Length: 333
Image 1 (cartoon, rainbow, N blue to C red):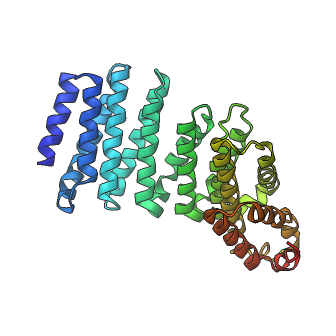
Image 2: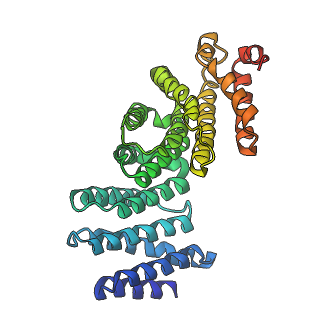
Image 3: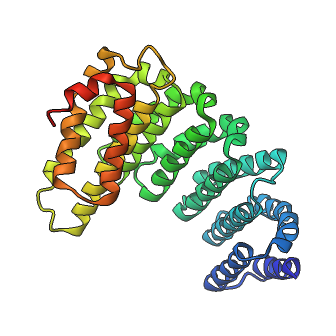
């Protein structure tokens, strides 16, 4: 049944070229069908993905028009929904072909009339693959990381950059030590984004968390970039005073997000010391972190939100486990 509906929809959309709003509605219906399908439909959904792949590849030869890009973005969404429903049973060879096709679609799209919606859908599809494949995504790092870095550098579009930053963090957590060859390129892209005067302020919390994810992947990140990273985090911890008008909901949400992201990022950095006996318990390393107890004290004394308090307690626990000096110096706070 689901196959018949799919082919009827695809024939209608691709060959009869209905109005845009009709196309949007038809694809929305089909995505809902996939996500809400029963376990018995998994085999049928799995059989549809290769057809979707071929249709998306065929669409690259269409004329460079908004309607063509819209169909491509919808097909990417359907592929993403299908992968989300299928789970980890995707064949690795076919997954590689999908990733390469997505990257190819993105590169062709950037040569023509740029379409943010299509770029977002391409990234969402990549994000779904990463979440479902987890550590298996390691074999695709050579293709994924350059693609994500290009999207991160495009700091003028918040949705595209935020998606790319979040996916890069997921990739770091999934692949761990295997991410080591890409640490420098990823870190430099993040630093470059922060130097962009046009950066959307709402990207900064995501950047802090991503730096913690990169640090967790391998200790070489801290060895090479500790001074830059500490400068970023210390500046972030002092940025809240600029928003004195906290009556505005947007400012309050931004400050809360920054605080939580700063703590989460620092948790990733501190936890990265656990597998390095040279740094774990090192007085030299702890001296670099002396600003943290005061920062935590200020947050806990002024903000009693549950999620912020829990994040602070988690960071205190990690500091206590890795640095005995923390217990001595933090008593006064």
